[in-house]
Amino acid sequence: MDAPLYVPIALAASVFSLWLIFKRYLTKSPLDNLPGPPPTSFLFGHLPDISHRQSWREWEFIVDAYGPVTKLQGLLGLRVLHVADPKALHSILIKDAEHFPKKVEPATDTQVLIGPGLMATDGHQHRKQRKLVTPVFSVGHLRNMTHIIYGVTHKLQKVLETRVSTKDGSVIDINGWMARATLEMLGQAGLGHSFDDFTEDSIDSYGEALKMFFPVLARLPLLTVFVPKLSYVFPDWLINKMLRLMPGRDIRRMLEISDAMTRRSFELINDRKTALLQGDEVLAKQIGAGKDIMSLLLKANMTTSEAERHTDAELVAQMSTMLLGGMDTTANALSRILHVLSQKPDVQERLRAEIVEARADDDLAYDDIVKLPYLEAVCRETMRLYPPAEFVVRTARKDTTIPLFEPVRARDGSLMTEVPVPKDTMILGHLWGCNTNKAVWGDDAYEFKPERWLGELPKALDEARVPGVYSNLMTFSGGGRSCIGFKLSQVEMKIVLSVLLSAFKFDMSDKPITWNSSIVVYPTTGDVNTHPEMFLKLTKIA
Image (cartoon, rainbow, N blue to C red; front, side):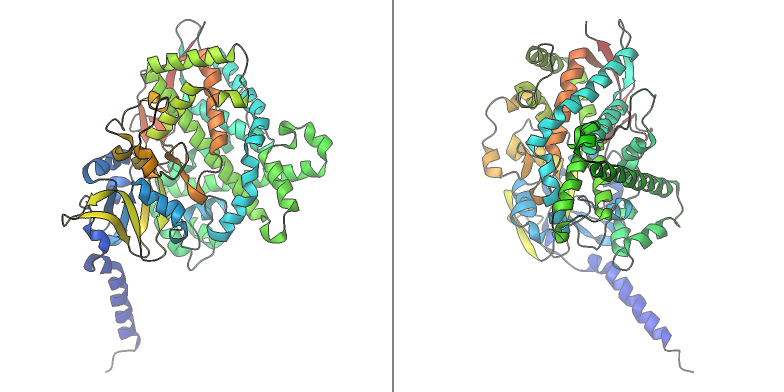
């Protein structure tokens, strides 16, 4: 009796599926000649080593042992190109950026969770969004926000003074307070809204959702892998529904965070729209006086052409993106600076002396605070060694090559001055790896030396063409997808440091501080704790 027709069809489909899965193991690639560590898992490649909380140690080993351009292995034999070479990154992010999009699939995990904001979109939609948003982050608008940032920081100073004993000092969760302060700054300067009066003992539920977004997402690496694949078949809203059927505490927590952010963003945008309709006289009496970022964005959106206008979904996603990116990165960057200063009291004292002399018992104007040389040097050096985000991810749209600043010794012994990149190759642009590239920064690249910014910079920097938007660094990325709010972040950090260092001395406490790899690097108390926090000892300065 003949077998039913579906049997050979099913068999052929199974064979074809297995071929698609295992062909990466059976075929060769130009990337195979690159150096790199052997994978630790047949199915998962290097993922077990590079996706855990302390994976920054593994990345440091990879760069030291194999160089700034290496081949790694992802899920099911996927070849991944790791790049910390500045010339290669210049090609990927600027010169040939159209060949290396951030997103090739219809959607990403971030887009499904918080909507089509700047962090998730690509191509024309991203350029349209960025064109509308860029003007509200201009230096002129930042000058108008300075008094708001000072107001929040002084309120924070007064609260901390009530919690610090006059004589012996007190141990305080600085990361928690930095998160609350940056959220309030973004609330007032970005939305014309106050989230926090600093009277309660903990951050509000919305702030907690923002603070936990990246740490929880980092615990769900398969979400990042499979959501883009599902987006070829299903729309974003249906993928979101499907995720709700999945078991697991982390996925449930991730969706709770996503829902809280979307709901609150929608409410706040409607508040801003209502305020705009009430006219300039009413706006002038509100927080931000109608000059907050969201009010300016909504005004610009009303006057632009239909084709360039943001949809409601884009506006909601843009607000979530702005708060998520602005709060978490700046709060953790401030925490890192204060951690470093606590470890290096001589640097802290020198910085305090510069600030106190410049302030003369009064707040510094925008143009004055951004010019303080040692404050600038400390911020730059901390951001060089400890970028809040570790990677940018791109995909090769076609077969191409990327040039190298320094030749790479291939597996066959030859020197490679450029790397052939096959179509669909995933590329991990390593921000820390580029910031500490010894061919650019010298043998002391891993050392914290603010004074390197006060003298002549290495000549290799001119040749390297580091594509970063900030100070020859990749910390805020580069090109058309660089961090749009990096200037706001910088002035927030400098104002907070100028006020708090004038009022307090910061020292290490007996509570251990562990920095954890994630989409945004964050601190915890030791290796076991998963909640972002960082305790330092504060003592009032007489």
